[in-house]
Length: 113
Image (cartoon, rainbow, N blue to C red; front, side, top):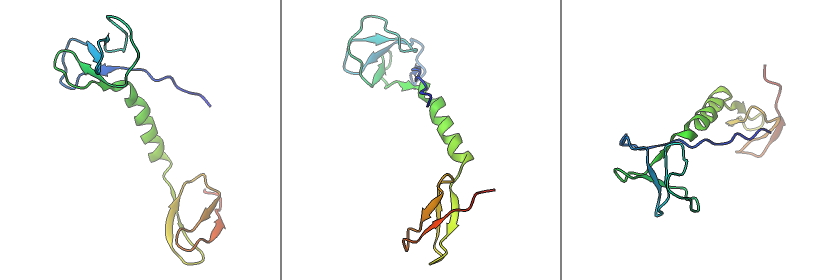
């Protein structure tokens, strides 16, 4: 499994042009790429714009979230009807055996074409 390193790209929601961010409740300043400007201290998960005080938005996570959404759209769950009680339900495409949530009947899933 390949682990993708997350890239930080901070942005002010008010579009301030200073590209200077402060760790929340700290005196460490970073630029829009997350590089330290003044001095280093322990990391904190929240940053704020030093010009307007707004919480910074990490745009580096957008690509990963969009890829996850795209994958979910490309492989939607399959729809099933229980052979025992005829309850309609959905299950992931990769699942080979499904269990009816209504009656508990277990049945194999034929290969999708």
